[in-house]
View 1: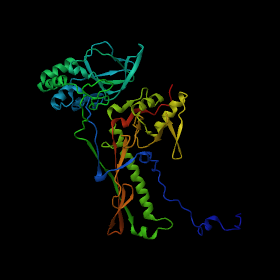
View 2 (view 1 turned 45 degrees about the horizontal axis):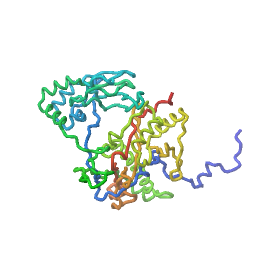
View 3 (view 1 turned 90 degrees about the vertical axis):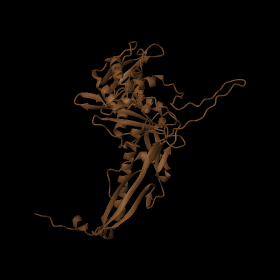
Length: 461
């Protein structure tokens, strides 16, 4: 038996009630710390030129490989990254030289080269991680450097002045190396007069004076008495400084006139459409600032400013090592949230507890007083590795800066415009939404990257 209803039901009552609504929500909106933290510089004329002192190239690049199944081959023109071959571009000769490399596999713990043995082979690291071990101050072995994918050692063999290995190099992980014995290179130079002359010119090239940063040295005297002749000098500049042109992210927003006319209470439909579109453009802008191959930070860090973790996951030791590369007033770390979690696990496993710093009312984790900000635009590889960025910021500090241009037509936010494009024959209103931006690293030591950071580990042993 059904009970008789004694009052008005809620379903009927809702027909007379005003529903409280939220504005449209969007899960893709992130904190976008990079956009907030970068100092933004006006790029009049749509470009920004970075003038630097002349820097000599010292051949510390990385080589690239192609893989077919289990076979690895170095790309011939990439051999130009080896200092004795820098500037040599005869592709047939380089291709023949690339064919002379032999592939060899090493297991963890294998010694690739041993200190005191004759240096007679060039090694290219196709895959894996190795420790460069040398004698410490008091006779103990010390890890001097970590070598990984794309790096090489033994290039002096090509110039004929390598002598003996002064350090031991041992595999940390399973490694794939390409090796070129000196005898094979000598045979290759015997078949090519151009290659032989190029190597001879490299060997006979006078050493150019440079400071510890690789810049042309400024001569000066100090601590002298009397009236000695003072050295003359000048500050040499790069003859072809790099220019950063503003990039653009654009889309066309379409709104039907019927929607714009009739459905604007309690919220303006066009305003909400524009708000979410602008949010998406800003997300793309941050993605480009991190990942763009032309100006993105991941691709514009100097090769000398890149580190590999010593053991895999990000440890306090790795973060300290990163700080040694940007020690002049570091501003902040930038890492994927999962990388930050992996760093937290490593700290907990060691009984180390990073502090927090207050940033505009937000409690942000920090290491050595330098805040660590999350950024989900830093990619994670299929093998669950990522990167950690550390930077100094601002023009005055010769750091990393963002570039934009304010005052553009129909500007609604700095460097972002919404331009009315008209109404078509279907009564659809169109707006062109554009964001203009770029980023520049003013000097190499303003940005450093910790690469190949493993985030799949649950913690240190």
